Amino acid sequence: MTIKTDALIIGAGPCGLFQVFELGLLDISAHIVDSLKQPGGQCSELYPDKPIYDIPALPEVGAQELIDRLQQQIKPFDPQFHLGQQVNRLERTDEGRFNVTTSKGTEFDAGAVIIAAGLGAFMPRQLKAPGASDFYDSSIHTKVIRPDDFAGQHLAILGGGDSALDWTLALHEKAASIQLVHRRPDYRAQPASVNKMKALTSSGKITEHQGNVTQVLSESGKLTGLELIDREGQRSRIECQQVLVFWGLSPNLGPIADWGLQLEKRAIEVDTEKFQTSVPGIFAIGDINTYPGKKKLILSGFHEAALAAFGVQQYLHPEQKVRLQYTTTSPLMHQRLGVD
Image 1 (cartoon, rainbow, N blue to C red):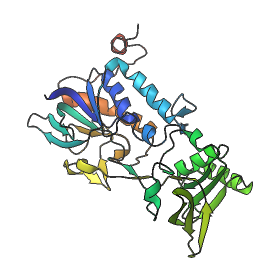
Image 2 (image 1 turned 180 degrees about the vertical axis):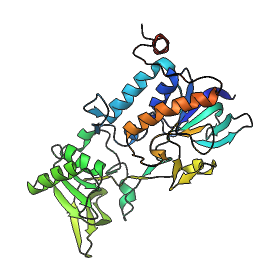
Image 3 (image 1 turned 60 degrees about the horizontal axis):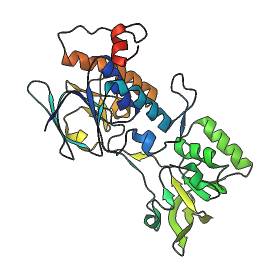
Image 4 (image 1 turned 180 degrees about the horizontal axis):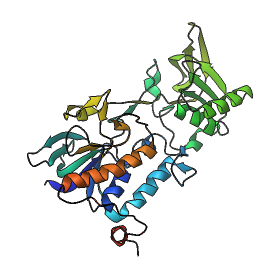
C-alpha cells in the first residue's frame, strides 16, 4: 500500500531529525527512511559517546545524547520512521510529486523529498592487512560503543583525524597502554587535540608511531600485535590486545547518484536560498550537499534544514505566502508544539 506524505526525508541523522522539527512548525508532515536500524546516523553508529562542543546552548553534549534530545524535540509532530531500508528508486511525476520505493518494497507518494543522508551509504574504512579479517568485531573495531570495555587493555589506535585523537585522549586513563599509529607525522585532527596527545606522548602515557600496518599478529587465536612499516621501509612490531581503526568513512552515494541530480565530487549541488537541488522538489541538507563556502558541521546542517523547510512549503503550496512566525510568541506555533 502506497504511503502518501507531504515530505519524505532520506536520512535519520541529526540534520534529518531536525528537518522534521522545522517542517512540523510549518504543518508539513514527514516520513523518514534510513538504511541503519536506528535513528542517529554517524552519531549513533560510529561515536555515540563522543562529546560535541559546538551545539548552541549545550557547552558539551554526547553524540547519542544529542540524538535523544532531537527525537524528544520532534515528538509533537509524530514522524514515521522506516529503518533498515534504503531508497533505491525515485521518480518525479508529471504533477511534480515523487514516487519512491525502498529496498524493502515500501512505497511512498511524496510531495517533496529532502535528502539528509550524510555521506550516503557510508561504511567505515577497514583494516585489510593479512590476519585482520579473523578479528573484526572481536578485537578490531571501527567504533566505540562502551568505553569501559577497553579498561585495562593494551590498545592500538589507528588514524590521524578527530576520532582517532578524541578516543586516544578519552581512553588513555582507562587503557593499560595506548599506541597511536598514523601513516605520517602530520595530523588532521584539531590542533588542540594534537597538542594534548603530544603532551601525553612526552610524559610516556601513550606511544606514537608513524607507518602503515602490514600484518595483524596473533597466537592461539588471540590478537597479540601489529607489524608496521614506516616511510623509510623499516619494519617494527607493537604489542596490543585490541585495535581501534578510525580511518574515516568510505562515501558512496549509492542509488542517489542515478537520480539525475547535479553532482560535484560525489556531493549534491544545491542553492543557498532553500537548499533545493537541480531537480525541483528535491532538497539536500547536511554533509551530502555542496555549495560555495560549505562547512560540514552539524550546526550548518541545522541552518540548512530551517531554510529547506520554507523551500518545501513554497514548493508544496506556491499560491500561499510564506510567513515567518516565532515559536516564542506565535499561538499557532504553540498549538503545533503542544505548548500550553
